[in-house]
Image (tube, rainbow, N blue to C red; front, side, top):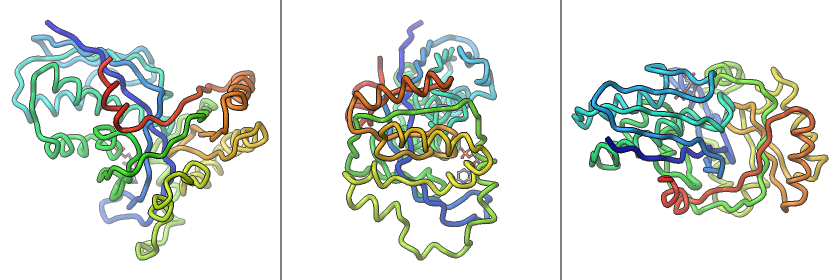
Length: 293
Ligand code: C5P
């Protein structure tokens, strides 16, 4: 039986505009997503048994509750595959942190198992499986810089945003995505979709994006977790040109000019007991070329 290694990259959101709450309970978004150089390692092994998913991190659910397990099950059903798979997830992306770790694991499983099981589904069919798994999963079939609309699941490639000195900081709070959006619902205006979202304006000058980044969920999530605002302030005082929360939080992204200041800030954040990693934006091409380890 053969096996392969797959990199499952994290994402950040350069922008996240929440336009309205929809009839189906989801929120209508315009968001610019970006893959970054932090990744989980997945080892996928073909078996003749059931689908199994195990992880190095006890906070990641194992078995059927795991999103990678769900991805494998869906792919096997749609493609009519008989074989099984064992999925081992070596977790380096913080869990429930706004970095898309679970969604990325699901997409990496779809890509990896397609190769391992020699499945040839079209892009449309893969996207269809991905969107049913979660709003961020289709983005990870694409990677790079992309616009997400609808629930975030309808993705369009954009010109690549470059950013080589990003610092991710997580102060250990897990935020459920559903809880973050629930906090926002009283603030959103239901029929406000006519306004040109900031995201689309920002996308017109992609080079400016890292410094113009913003997130509609930040205010409500930071109000519930004051540590987030403190990390943002601290990063700015340590030389970040800009800092904001990623996705539904609680990870903060600091945008730095150079290696020295970002490295110094990382040391400072770690000294404060926070998880912190330096990363850079990963473009679509590099994403595609490095996904198989
Ligand atoms: O799609 P996903 O399962 O990742 O979403 C998790 C939860 O986040 C949803 O159940 C919903 O409560 C919330 N959400 C939302 N609007 C979105 C995406 C997610 O309200 N566009």
